[in-house]
Structure formats: structure tokens, C-alpha cells
Image (cartoon, rainbow, N blue to C red):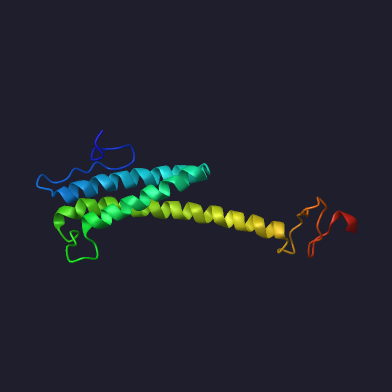
Length: 149
């Protein structure tokens, strides 16, 4: 199946009949990026960090290719051409998927930080007992260990 055909999650986007080779390639990379961001979300959702990490290098290569194909930041910037409007819409969808993934990452990091804060005993109202390296309940500020009963 060509990357330009409709996939399960990305909209069908066919280049205009007189599309430049750069636009055709950019659309293909855009669809690959879209699918990759969906895979990234699924990996984050199930906490498959190996898959998530593996996608990062591939994503960077796609970003580099898209930068080169679009000419962004150079006098040869192609994005001002109306023929590239569909591509810009696809990339806007990718941006939204990236933001969704970022929100999920931030939520998971907040949960981890909260857990670590509780385990470190920096919350004086926490009633959690923490064991030290020797397997004994450590004395926490404001908390009551089993020896203080």
C-alpha cells in the first residue's frame, strides 16, 4: 500500500496532478510520521519504552528529510506555494499528535515525581513507611515508623 493512500488513522491525501517530486516525497514522509506518532502513543500508553526509544531515531531522520524537502528556513522555502496546503494540514495533524503524546508523557512523569516525592518522605502528611537499604523502616520527617508506636 502506498503511503499516500488512506491509512487507518491518517486522512487520505493525494498530491495534485502537477505536484513536484519534493511535494510527493514530503507527503509520503508526512504519512510515515503520522503513523509513527500513533505507534509512539500506543507505546507510551502501554509503557513500552523500548519501542518508544526505537522510534526516536527514525523520527529524527524523518524531520531532517522533511526539512530538506520543504526548504524551510532557506530562500527555497516551498511552503508558501498553495500546492503545499494539503501537506501543511497533514503536518498540523502530526503536530497535534505530538502534543497529545507530550501530554501523556508529562502526566506519567508527574505521577512518577509524585511517587518519588512520597517515597523520599518530603511530604510530611504522607503516612507511607519507606525501607532503607538494609531493609529497615527508615525514619521519615513527620512520619511514624514502627519503632515509634
